[in-house]
Every structure is written in C-alpha cells, then in structure tokens.
Image 1 (cartoon, rainbow, N blue to C red):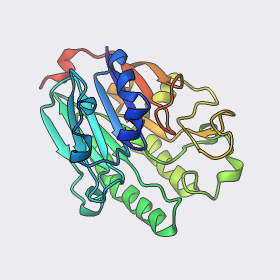
Image 2 (image 1 turned 180 degrees about the vertical axis):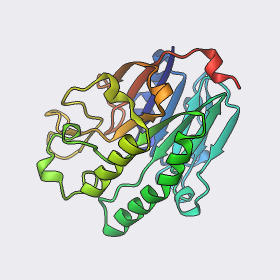
Image 3 (image 1 turned 45 degrees about the horizontal axis):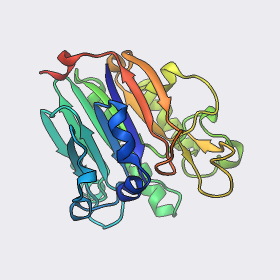
Length: 263
C-alpha cells in the first residue's frame, strides 16, 4: 500500500501550532504534499518541521510569508525538481516534483484569482501554459500524481453554493472547461471521484460565517493522476476530525508495491 496526502496548510508554522506534525506520524503516509507553506528555510529550522523518517523538500516563494510548496517523503527520491522552469511561477514557489522509479509526485499550488483581475489573468496564463506540459506527461510513459490546491471546483457537485458562485474565481466557466479538457481530452483522472461519487465532499471552507459548521464548502484540492496509477487507488478520505487550516487533508491509498518506486 502507498499513501499520499495533500493539504493546503495555509502557513506551515500555523499548521504546526494546530497539531499537524503531531497528527502526521500516525498516518503511515509515504508522501505528503503541502501547499501555501508561507515560510522561508530559516523560519522552519525547528525539529518539528523535520518529522522522523521523512525527507523534506521545499520550493519557497521569493516573497516572505507567501505561497510555497513542500513534499515530505518516506522514500528517498531519484530526482527532485524544484520549480517548473517558468520564472514568474517559480518566484512564487508553486511547483515541486519528486521522482521514484516510474512514479512522479508533484505538489502544485495554482493561483487564486479572487483578489484582483490581474491574478485571474495570471491564473489563466498558467493554465494555458500547463496544457502542453500535462499533454506531454500523459504520453511520456511515466506514472504521475499531481497533488494540490488547484483553486477550481470542477462541477456543481463540488461546491455547495454553485449558483451564487458562477461568476466567481474558482467556479468560472472557463476554469471548469479547462478541467473538462484535462479529464476528457488530456486523459488525466480525478482520482477521488473514481471511488467517491457522492455529494457534500469538500476540502475548503471559507472562514466567514458558519461555512465549516454548515459544510458550505468547495472541493478544490485534488490528486490528479495518469490512468494506470489512478486505477490503483483503493481508498479515499477527506480528513475532518481535526482542523489544521481552512483546508482538509485529502488522503488516497494506492495498491502499489516497492517495484513501482524503482527504475
């Protein structure tokens, strides 16, 4: 069994204070992908940020207290790629990839466009640039799992108040059509939905009002995979017994063995 967890921590130091690293050792996770870590190396020198048995990798934003992604891995990767090679994206710390044999796991933090129009334009630009990358990955013979906060709810079932949000970033028609392209044309798989087709399955809740208490949420955190690895998924969970941020950990177990992790 191979377990991958993804979580937008909304600040890795804040998540640590809320018990994330106390919770982690009991999860038997092989890979943990984090987004919005919002810390530089000197700000995470404490032992808590280096859980026993894990290799830690970070791609930080140049701007302090902003963005950033990380991967914790029980297995030592064959290769670590910090950044996607696009200066504007890498300056914000939005892409980190680790390779194990035939499997690649990526921690991705797609921008939100909700703060201002320029950020939505930036988001659309990244989505367009990702198309050839995702197409290449889908056809290069490797197995991929891209984990992260995509800041898009794909379908009506993925957002409680879908009618009221059709003109808001994260549920815009063009964003949803891009997700359609990824799943219907580019041959990627929304792994969670292969096992859990039900309603009221969300990973993020606004801090406004009683969104968490009333489960008025959005499913914007995904593990998206190539078909062969997606077919190995056997269990999914959105963990809500404890809260480490405004997002919930998405946990998926895969029926793969050590040979997948060897070249």
